[in-house]
Length: 298
Image 1 (tube, rainbow, N blue to C red):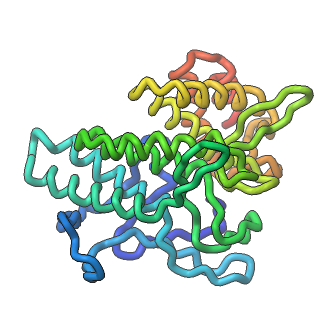
Image 2 (image 1 turned 90 degrees about the horizontal axis):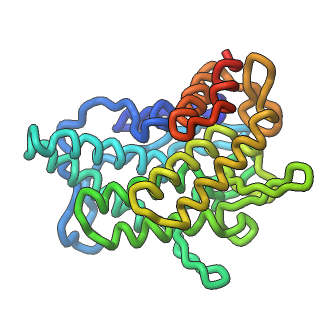
């Protein structure tokens, strides 16, 4: 996210950005996490805690408070991780986290768009407001949010064994195979005579090609491939790695890095995040190109 955007989480303090690499965020303890309802009554109003992001005013446009899918999936993943951590140590507390994680997962499922393009069925999460920083209109989508929702759905499957969650995770993955122009999250990015896959964090006809969101999405797609054996995910991961290696030099600002393809320099937070992501890629692949830029960007 751009540094000009102020995140204020109302009711549930969340730091989404600090959790991009590990898949969860720093978070204050929530005492009452029992928010998953079995057989909920239609039209009944439930008193629940939801992550709400405050965007304020951006470029003169008031956006205010929004329930965003990326902060919902971030909180859901945090609760899943707490469940796995506590299920043997403190089963009762673990169940509270699981209930909350599943409630938030079900909320995400209810908000997904179900699409079909040229025989490919996929689900995708869209934002219900304009984002003036990159001139995005209501209904825009992004790879980082999508990959977070994919990860959330797999964690729900891992925690419950319910195949419905795995099926939906596979449909979420499919969005990365559908061109942005057709409502998906795939851009073919040219470099010389070569073409590369890119999954834009801010999807549009001419996206800004933000680096950290793309790398994180590729890592999480690779994680899904490793856990499920999904060949499509493996292919997307490998294509993503090719793209990262090809375009890394374009994000090189000497001893610093660019945030996007518009040559916007990273602030200290994103510079640190870039280095963390590069070190992760090096540890995953052993490819020294990642170590080269890790050492170069101070």
